[in-house]
Image 1 (cartoon, rainbow, N blue to C red):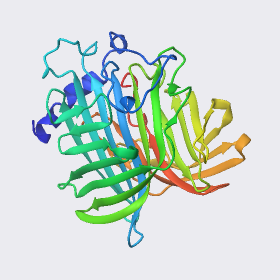
Image 2: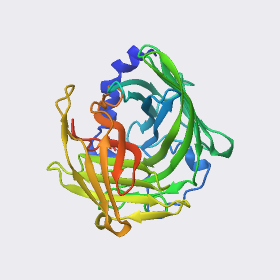
Image 3: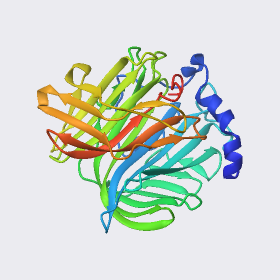
Image 4: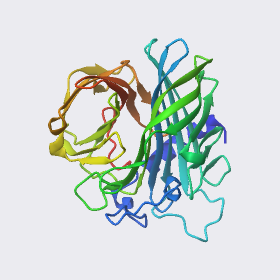
Length: 365
């Protein structure tokens, strides 16, 4: 199936992504508080769970100091009301894989993105179950010796691409309670969530068709679950921040239709890699500006002040470029995903992700 054919299936796939609430459970396994993650196997796919994604963001510079941000994500979503059975035909499509690749040229103030979309049952869309080894058409993402990650993804038609090697500088961080990351009040409104929060990044990045040898730092997330969001959550604001003092900070807030937080949590990763789980009362997030998308008309927050009183942290978070909205056909969503810089108590850099402003995410995750 060509990319054009894949796009024509987007509406069908989107219907599966936004399936009825009653199908959220079905035979799909929910993430429970008895979660016990084992690696490297849990870097791989979890086909008994309906939703999963592997996600990398980073900020790099070329030899001349030109700054870029990048995002690379592969999503897996189960089709139907139950996971694959052991006697299913090998090529029967039971999952759909979508990929998003974005390169942000900070100096030019421009974000360019590309997509891939395939159903399972083909060598062109696969995810190993025993380790991180993903294939989506001509894009690959895999873990090698010493946990070194390799990304290979290009879209010559859009002039962007990544050929990167990412080396963890800290142990894998498990968020929440041993990786059980609650996203709602109901048992099972949760994901399994693990991250490498600081990866030394080297390789090649393409922007406007031109190759740049780059180096910098990246962040890796892997999450899976079956009924992650409650029915009252329409979207989220997420921050993955690397502080110049050697710590990392992950925060998220889920919002209802009135913009009120329904759930908030986070993690502070210390210099030695130990993780402090953060609850709602441990931090505040205050938006300081707005940006209206010329593409969708969505009104996004743009700039924040984050405070963690017990840690003595007050961080001013500023987008490095305004227009980082991705309007996607492969997942039928529009969201803002862009590089940010930090000032205040500690300087640093990172990424922010804002969903639900251009359409509710309810029943999609």
